[in-house]
Length: 390
Length: 224
Image (cartoon, rainbow over all chains, first blue to last red; front, side, top):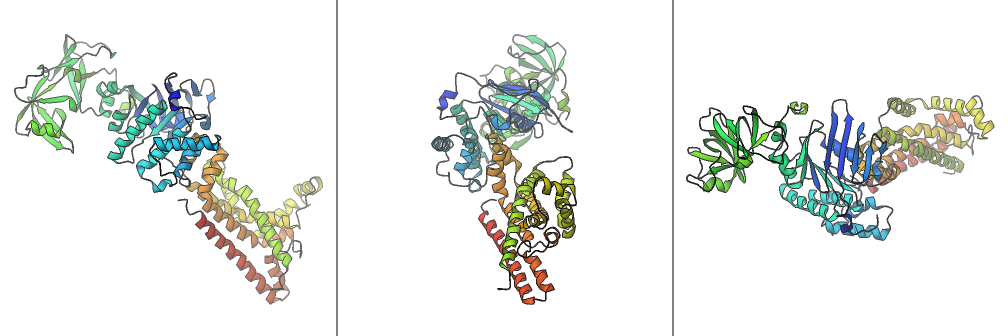
């Protein structure tokens, strides 16, 4: 653990994370398996689903019944081979939700805490480097309670990274921070990760954080992995109704397969034709004509057309009326009742406030909408997983 | 003040100091275990460590006398095989005082350890520190106010111990007689001046302990 150049860590040997963790509790059963690459992965899901437990199992803070945990070439736990590396030898940078800074130590002492054994000079140099990377210079003699929430979070990151761990584990890193500092820290985490070249696992229940942080997303609920994949896969092509709901898909619509044409599946949505693009990369069981399916359309993917617009191929065009609208700070949410429907509303649409005003929308007018076939995702669900029942 | 025997003061301080050291060595780890671990029989251990607080000191002294004296196998083993004679010595008195003052230290230190967030210890361990290192760098400094309070209370209690000391060590002037026993002697002998002086001295020692305690509290105030 000498003062290696940060760059020497990255590149040649990608550290893949491979986790299989099983533990039975009285009222909860953890049984997760996922992998992540040499970048940021997000464990995403509702509170109490087992995300933090999984993170603690990787750190060695929770005992497992069975499983295997490997970070790159290092096996930290393997129940079959009876490997269970003690937590102090795991080389894991763990930052819990409340940061757990040592209140009786200064910022510099906190950061240096994991550097015992290295000489005083190397330690001071490492602390100075971490202070610089986390932009905490000048605060080294402060104590944790004299710092703002964002500064505390950065001290926790610096402390975890100072002893050059093989992996960084962050539990709800932004939960206690306000919006402006969140964005700043998200950038800090991304650049710290790049400077170290180690995998980062982030636990969050926040959709926006999950989307902006994770290249890979693992959806965990009820102690199980519901889906894992790239951010785009999970957010735009959820594997189940439950995941679609968890990742914030507002429109999950029941449709019937009516046929197949060039590159699209033709669907029937209560008499209205809808075309859904087929993704060749997305392995899925074949669809049969007449099959009932559910189609996901994210609320930001429904376009409202100005009368007479011709720039877009006229596919999946729907007429409707705004039944209700909710004004947010930056986005407006419209609940639209599609023509010919007797439901209170059929589609939820999100659009920037300026678009709302530019289109001159209001509840009295008929509106014309269109959805790109690429934005219609058919859920290929074999059957509801047990966890979704919770 | 010439009425007070200097040896009484010295013996009292010797007994109290040794008793406090014994209490720390046994009591602090025990308090930590009771604060951090849930195990079978924990309630029994907790009850046993509190028992001397409610028992008459003479009962504790009586059992100790039996355990350390020649009348029991353990006492004979101590004397014959180890060559350790504790009955009617100031060291024996210190053991008695330690048993009686330890509950104060254990209870105070235990609740102080319980106040330390276990997550701090967990994080410290993930940073590569051993359990012992975590204890001395995180747990103990953060619990120091409570532990120091417990030590001060234990010392004051040990300095004032009478019943058990009397049973185990007797009343040998210059050898085992402590200040509380000296008061008893003085009253028995009708020497009220000496009793007054001795009592006042004991009040002073106890007060000093408590002042020392609030001073250490100030010293460790930087912890939350």
